[in-house]
Image (tube, rainbow, N blue to C red):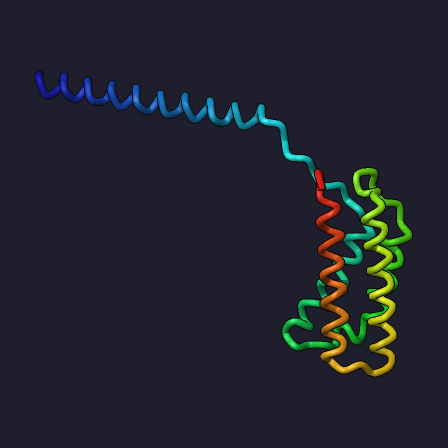
Length: 146
């Protein structure tokens, strides 16, 4: 009988501990829902289009494969121009972004012309890396709150 009462008491105690943990977890989840969500970055389709070509040419170049950029330099330039001419989402309509986009177009044009003139891999690497850096500067300026 004494053992049975001890077991019942132990089960009851475990039940209280479990319910307190569940209650505390529910409170944490509820508090998380009431916190304001982080500002979402707006979609700028021309930026995404440019990024697809940039990433599919830059990352192979990092691994020593210059074929993608040699084949797609004209496309990269066209995507840069389309991005610069497009209408920016309101939160990204900033003079500093427009200035960097103009630089990106100029860099893309230079790279396209260098490749047409049979540039070496080293020359391409310098130009494409500079473009990649400019792209990341623009991407940083496009982030909410920047």
